[in-house]
Image (cartoon, rainbow, N blue to C red):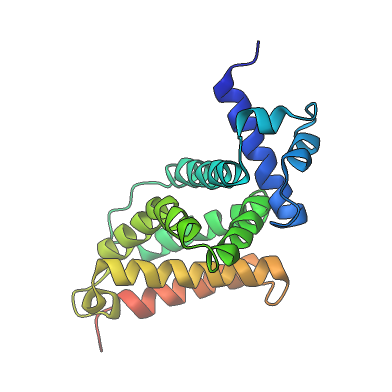
Length: 198
């Protein structure tokens, strides 16, 4: 017999794949069953409602992000280039092997503009990403820098927004930057926002 936790994870992963491939309109219990290669009714047996299925996908996205961000090395705050390289590596993964996850996230983010409950769930799910960004900028920022003056929470949000823009542009083809260009942009952003004023 399949472990219920494994089945939930399998179906949540299939929901993410379905969201990326077919959008929110294409996210049905039957579509998730097909994506997972399971008999019809499997998904609705685990997630009774569409909202429960969406919530499971959001939770799984957050788990995957948290797991991936946990692989970042510890930073001592003195080497901006090391931080920029690590962030660029994460961006590279999120636009290649993590592409499906990112597309699903953007699909859900757009829907969240119409569903306040989903918006709250997505904000809570992204807390670990924002915390990592906040901590990185806090570690790097000179007190009189842009990030230092804005404070850690606002600076962290600003950094996440910058990274989201790079990812979104890359995935949609509006600004498919090379790895070198992403590294240069990330390093430039970090220098501009964390350096002491001249």
